[in-house]
Image (cartoon, rainbow, N blue to C red; front, side, top):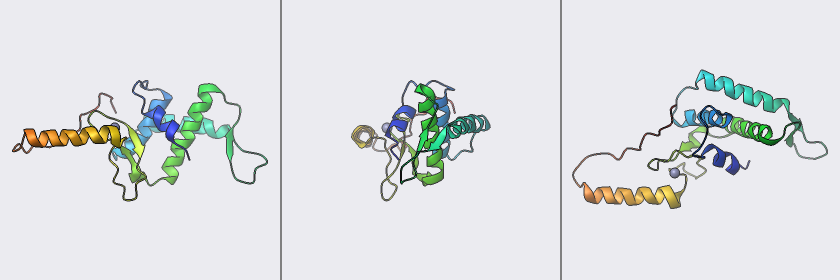
Length: 158
Ligand SMILES: [Zn+2]
């Protein structure tokens, strides 16, 4: 399952509120916050996956089990593919591996595929490095303040 495209889309900064993509993102985001699924989101997600399943067929003439979407084009097809991928994640992935980046101000979602589930950042070279330099900076600046470095709350509403 190649999920790179899905996560690039879900992590886009200009994600339109209430759009189909935003719904898919919220489904995965609920996992990271261990919240119950919102009923409105569940309903929208059900509609998206329902539509996708209506268009899903077994690919003919291959030895392996492969599916394809028929009768959908453009953004309809894209969102249906994404909906099926999110559904796949819910069913097949260890859900504690679905995470949100701990980088300051970063809201990126990702699947932690590390051996010991220790990944904390969407991108070690970016958010990981920023975080490291910030921890270093804070440590040397506020030696005795017991303040924890808290992640910023995102602007997006749940
Ligand atoms: Zn990040």
